[in-house]
Image 1 (cartoon, one colour):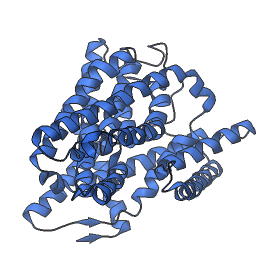
Image 2 (tube, rainbow, N blue to C red):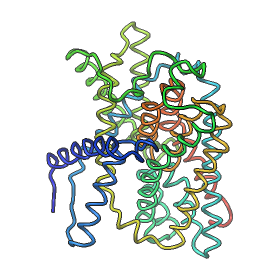
Image 3 (cartoon, one colour):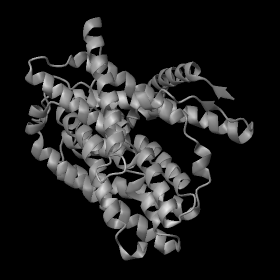
Image 4 (cartoon, helix red, strand yellow):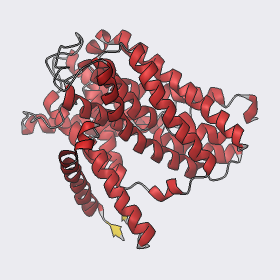
Length: 404
């Protein structure tokens, strides 16, 4: 059954409404601060899986809006990135980036070690490591093609997509429970971590911290912001095409983010700052719809068909993420409330993707209070620096003798 672009948009909207209802109606989802798009999206994916498995009916959604929504979300992150503010969070950003890069290395070491223990090609260990987990679907598919063409690894792209799908699900599920556990560690309850409670959060919420808040804006501000987003998408896509195949190659969304950062800060220097409320409104809508579409279109039967070695690697990676988040990320980042939110975000993009990280943090801050620092640091690390670090890490691992 084929669902056209309008039907897909209707289903995505219903998924978001269903997620809101589920989180409101099921206490355990609220307790573990599961993001609403994740709750609704997984239920939709399970329904599609049931139709595939028992009714022998495949539902095919038209996902042509999914990529523009994702790119629009990254453009709003860039438009909201004030470089002057980033200077204040610079030391924290550097420390968080070091924590993130260390996990990339551990993911690949664990993946390769388990692949070799199972007697399969160690390239599967990389696919089940930072290639597909920290890298996501796009990076996984790109490297999967490289592994097939240059290393002769059969079905590498399919395995990469399946691994990335697993990571996207687990990244959205783990952030809330890990944050809940850590809140008990610091002895805080809902409302205790109010703005300013840690000394780093600020009374003025960050643009993405309150996705349900009404954003006061005007048609003019909305159109101006939409224009900036469109410019970011067009120029970012062109830039991505120019550097494709070179040593500077980066995913399109990173180029879009970079262009948006330049636009926003250039306009600020000219005394024409972007309309933050309009940016927040468009960004949160794009994020919610993208996550709903990404999750409801997951092919869960691809996960069911994973070979035992790859599935074992992914299970071990999930355990590594939880242990690392609790005992490394949380402690290194200060063992306070900001560290809790940073850790929830790390779970989101360490296994899944930047939108999952933002959704995790939104779910936590909606319950426990603002964390301006986390929303300042995580988007830049998760959407920009991690892709550069991951590309370098993958290339360095491929230089090991076991791959030659």
